[in-house]
Every structure is written in structure tokens, then in C-alpha cells.
Length: 499
Image 1 (cartoon, one colour):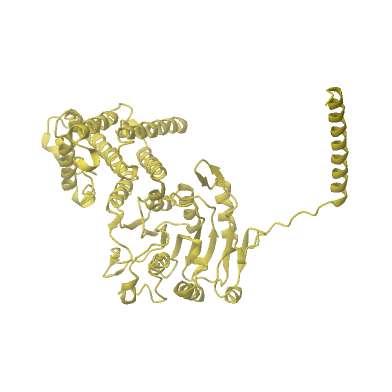
Image 2: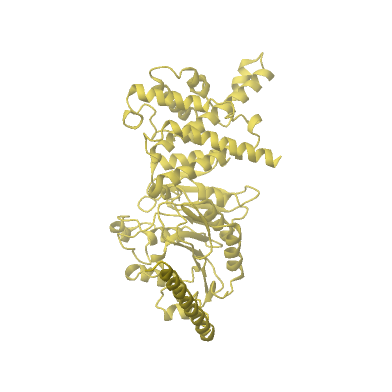
């Protein structure tokens, strides 16, 4: 059974990826991803609605009022002119882009509590994005017909496990991130890194989980999915409007309907609030933009949420601004933070050095894990995972240098299952491992002036093996003897040729 599902998943992934051919070469991947993903979401909503409607009509065919009542209580409500089938029937209309926009607008209105604003940043009638009327209509018709493929039937009775659609959505996002190059890292965290963070942070039943720079939601979903009984609450905030919409849809396609995903600038306008204070979470995880310039340092000193009481990060590097925000949103009892950052956060001086010193003095830093280079979309530089915890009993910090163990894969490196397991096992053991991990006391960090650069603590130097001079001398003599033989042979040949 699992094998059949796997084949179907691969087929759906391939067919949906094929729909992108409509836009490839004419529209940038960072732009056309929104059209494809919105259409996938629309097709899913329509197919589920169609199956529910057919079932109720079969069951209550003589009682239309009861059918309407049943349908009005469904997870999502669609009107007849808002379905994919309606759009397909009208695919040749000269105003097809406008019809799609109207359908999306009505879907928002009928499902305001869940979908309000999700489609506001997408325009299927956009001339700048999709071309002049004739070209635009041709592209949209092609897209509609691609999704009308009978093998892209998303009715629950056909796909079985809902994860198939969520996985297909994630697959598309990962492909778009790869195609988008540098911009890809803005909305997607590689799955193996997300899996690693989930294993390190160990979310448990009842936990509140947050990502203040959630992108398309992939990292947040991976961490939440480690709670096997699904007893969790999920919150996130994303600054980019289009990416925020992708995250909202991603949550629904993974069955996380109660997720609170806010749109806005976390550092300057945090929206995950309760009683006008920052919400607190058991697990806070993020892959924020590296060294964000102009993040709002000029307003940090007067921050009403007291996030920068340990110091204000430099205006050209917002790494510690995100870290400090995350630390302030941990619950007191068992709060833990996992954040991905550039290595500069470990050793840069100035205000960052002072912040680092304060975090160590407060015994919040739990581990520093160096990752391989070229893991992330958009940057080839190696990154580091910083783990923070509230109420730590131990005073030491574990340094792990996992930078040399990875699998090479075309354009990017990847962490394999064995490599992830080794990192997690080492972290949980909290022990020094020769040339891989070092358990460091606070005194040593003080001696190093709070410089946390991993090579200061984990010695990975490999001594060169001793050279056997006797063997080398014998090899030189052998080669010299061989050279004399070759010269003699050449001389004999030249004599024969009278040269």
C-alpha cells in the first residue's frame, strides 16, 4: 500500500511541476510560483467541495435545504461560479483572468475567518506579469487545461491520505526555491535542516510552537509534525505578503487549520501578541534572513517589548535582532530556541560581542552546531545552529563541528539521515567527541573573551602522517634507474635512424 502511495505521490509531483512549463522562460520563477501554488490550492478546494456536494446530493436528494445546510458547515465553502470546473468551462472566455480573480475574491469572502487576504497579492489579469490579453489568455488556458488532467484528481476518495497534497505543495516550493537561486532562501528551508531542528528541539504534546520569520511555513510544519498526537498550536509571522499567503495555504494543505500566521515585520511590528505583550512559546524556531541590513536599529532602544535590553545589534546586521526577539518569546518553564544564523554571530565584536557575553552570563546558550557549506538556497556560506534554553541546570555549552560530513548533490550539499542522527545523538549525550564535539565550561569562554568561533573549541586538525625517508629514497633510485634505461633505448633508436 505504501508503495502505491509513493508512486502516486511521485506522479502527482511530476504532473504539477509540468504545469510550470506554461510560464517558464517568460516569467521569473519567484513570480510564477504564486500562480501555480494558488491554482493547486484552488483545485484542491474545488475537488473536495465537489465530492462533498455529490455525496450530500445522493444522500439528501429530495431535501435541497438540508444539502445547503450540510455544505455550509464544511471546512471550506465554495459557490458554483468559484470552482475549478466553472473556470475550466469558461477557459476560452476573453476575460478569463478576471473570472479567476472574481472566483478567488468570492472564496475569500465565503471563508473570511480562514482565508481573508490570502489572494489579495495575486492577479490573474495582470498585464505586467502575464502579458497582453492574447498572450495572457493563452497562458491561462494552458494552465487550466494542465490542471484538468484526470490524474490530478484531488478528491479525498481518489488521493486517500491528505498528506499527498501537502507533500506536492512542499515539493513545488522546494523546486521553486532551487530555480529562484538567491531569492529561494527567502521562503524555504531545506527539509533535512528542518528535520534536524525538530529532532534537536523535541516538540512535545501540548507545546506552543512559533516561527517569527516563517517564510512558506515549511520549517514550522516539519517541527509541528514531530508532535505525533497533533496536540500543538502553531504561530508564525512573515514580512513578505506573497510568501505569507503561501504559508497560509501550506498550513491548510497539511491539515493545520488553527495556525495563526500573521503578515508583518516581526522586528518593527510584532503581531503575535496577547494582552498587548509578546506571546510566549515552548518552541521557537527560525531561519531568518542572514545579516539583514536596515532592520530598524534606530527604533530598538525604545522597543516597548524590551527585546533589546541586552544591547542593540548593528543596523547593518539584524541577526541578533531576530535572536533576541526569539529569546524574549520563550516560556519560562521549558522554553527552547533553535535559530539558523551565519557564523559571524559567533565572533563579531562591538554590540554583538556584548550581547553574546550577556546571553552566556545568563546561561541561555545551550549548543553551537556548525553546518556544512552550501546547504541553503541563496548562499554557499556555511551556517550555524544556535540552541538556547530557559532554566538550564548545566553551565557548559556544547560545540559541534558537523561541517565536514554531508552528501554532495548537484548544486547543493545535503545532510543525510546518518549525519543528522550523529548530530542529534552527540547533542543529547552532551559529551566531548574527538575532532567533532567539545563540551566547554563558562570559564573557557570567558578566557576567549566570549568568542564562540567553533575552531577555538573543536580541534579538527589532522596530523600529517610521518614520511618514511628510506622508502622515498628507494623509490627515487628506482625511478632514476628507469630513466637511464629509457634514455639508452631512445639513443639506440636514433642510431638506427642515423640521426
